[in-house]
Image (cartoon, rainbow, N blue to C red):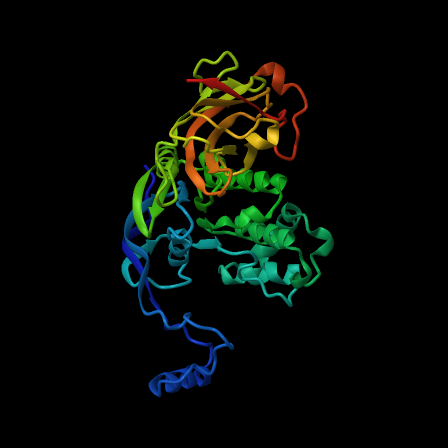
Amino acid sequence: MSQPVIRVEGLSKRYQLGTIGYGSLHHDLAAWWARVRGREDPNMRIGERGRRDLHGDFWALRDVSFQVNEGDRVGIVGRNGAGKSTLLKLLSRVTSPSSGSVRVKGKIASLLEVGTGFHPELTGRENVFLNGAILGMKRREIQAKFDEIVTFAGVEQFIDTPVKRYSSGMYVRLAFSVAAHLDSEILLVDEVLAVGDAAFQKQCLDKLQTISKEDGRTVLFVSHALTSLSTLCNKGVLLANGQLQTDSTIQTVIQQYLETQKGLQTEPGVNRENIQRVTTNGISGSPQDRFLMDEGVVIRTRIRELAPGQRAYCSVEITREDGIKIVNNVNTDSGFPYLEKNGVYQISFAPMMLYPGRYHVSVWLGDATSEKTLAHFENECHFDIEKDNFAISRTLPASTGVLFEKGAWSFVGD
């Protein structure tokens, strides 16, 4: 049975608003003296207001407790501002907690931001050795893995060039390669992989699986790419507003996260019944949420409570589970006039050749005159694309993974 390597108990991190220093004692004293005398901060830019006038406590994390076992691959999920990056900084001891404790058994390698730990004036070669030394490795240990690190990053030609001249992609490739190849029991990875191209992202995920399953290393991975998380991770942690919501299997965590993103959002005063229901159907019209790769998809939207003479437009968006937008179609853009009466409207997409996976449907309804939102269903329903041996043998587009004809709108009545 695997043993716990990370124990987080009652972990909280509080920031006090309005108390950020200027970076030098001279400037901090000048700001304090001006505040005491009731005068304007001499360090602020002309016209700047409010940034240092805010006071109070902001809890980035509050009373978070969980544990991670050796060899676990943990996906940390949550909306922007949920506390994911703060948690990794506390685990890697970049910052200290306000309360609670973090107990770690083993050496940690972290990749929290692009180029973390790199000195811009040093070459790629020098930064590899610098990072290894920071992690406590000896020179001969780094030298033994040096060629493998450089080859994986694909920067052989530029290894003796100062990293300040690297592109962001080269930066993150080398930084990830160093963190993944050097000797550490625990690897913390924040969303930096979004910088790399699709091929390198897959290469990184394969490497993370290898070092976890074969080498027994523990990985904590923050990402909004839910497909990548479900492929790589076996466990998950869901954060919301700095608090722990779920600590379970990655499938359970992703499902709960999607449920929190689902629902009706409207502007103040909007009739919540303007969109009554959104469903996915087959070409025959029957309700369906599973399709083969070369099947067409029909999305039906029931519109209610349009005022007499009111004209509205409807927009349907299909988003892949990892957040990539696949389709965004507005009725007036596809040759269909504005919606002018209540009933069921549908948009039919010809066979789209989507990659296997889960896709989410969002629908907007807007007033054609005022351009105000009448209703907005965010991730209201979803459908799954399954493999089709005939379709998968054909050439799929490499860029977005989708090929579709423009949707056709139609009114099918009540």
